[in-house]
Length: 409
Image 1 (cartoon, rainbow, N blue to C red):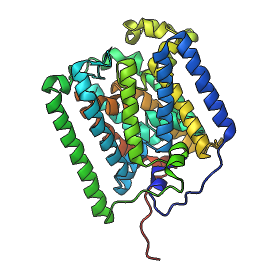
Image 2 (tube, rainbow, N blue to C red):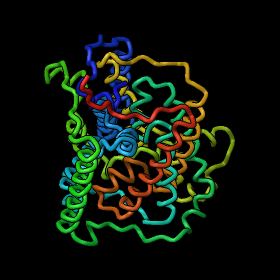
Image 3 (cartoon, helix red, strand yellow):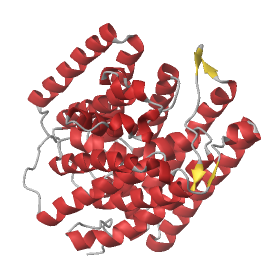
Image 4 (cartoon, one colour):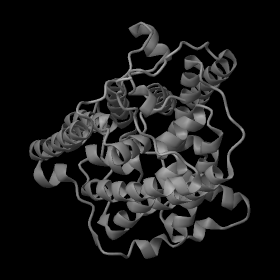
């Protein structure tokens, strides 16, 4: 699978690969069958969200738009292209989302943002999540598109993610008693124009700071490698520039808002999957306080859960993208240290996501463009955890990438 480091290295080889036709056919067939099934059993909106999920998977894979490696490369080497792409994504997002959320409707559909309490549990959970994303090798979206792209190690991380999510719900009521501010929407508290200006100012500042750090350390910003393909085939087979990915993610998140009434989220489905698995095994999770007020979700078929439908769509979309790129090649042998890190990282990702009221998507991306105060607590906490996670990676035999330096020989 493409990595951010190789994608940003202008000297990296980029040789055309043959399309992997069998997994491509399988992924497209499953997407078509799933869309038809959901349209018949649930409705056209759910079917459309399934396809939006697939397009998210294609986008994440073709653009190699991961949050984990972007943060790691900045921490280890001062390279900020990934972070700058995230700031572009967030800036476009608030411009699109804030007016709609202030109005409360979009194309006749009631809409609301992801707004959560700004609590101590967010600080703790986001920090744990940040460590976990570096050990597990991916964030929530990164885990899904890597699994779909054929990463066997990330299947282990995903299983740990599900386990950690369920584990956090056992004593969730205790975590909810920690000091907290009420759910606060900056869009509603300040008005959307003031909130928009404030957010854009901070995104611009972060963009500028990453540029400054990179230029001071390396003398210039690294250039993204050119694609050997024409723009049309680059769109179909990848790789995409990071900016393409940023724009596509915003538009697809906006489509999610229009279809489901709320922005894109990922990790609540993992909690649901784990709870359903325990329930099937004989554990009466319905009596856990976490599910006390959400019995309908727990016992409803998973086809009715928007997040589940989109998560599966993401994995199938990434499978199609990896097949089109000619890079679907699962590796079944996982070193012991890497395996242990995947298990621990996955558990930390799941546990941290529940405590932090979301992941890199629900709390960070969608939280920011919802104007939620808790997103601004989540970001520095998760980044601090990520710094620790980068330091811990070598203990498990995991690489800490650095972009190649220009050489005169």
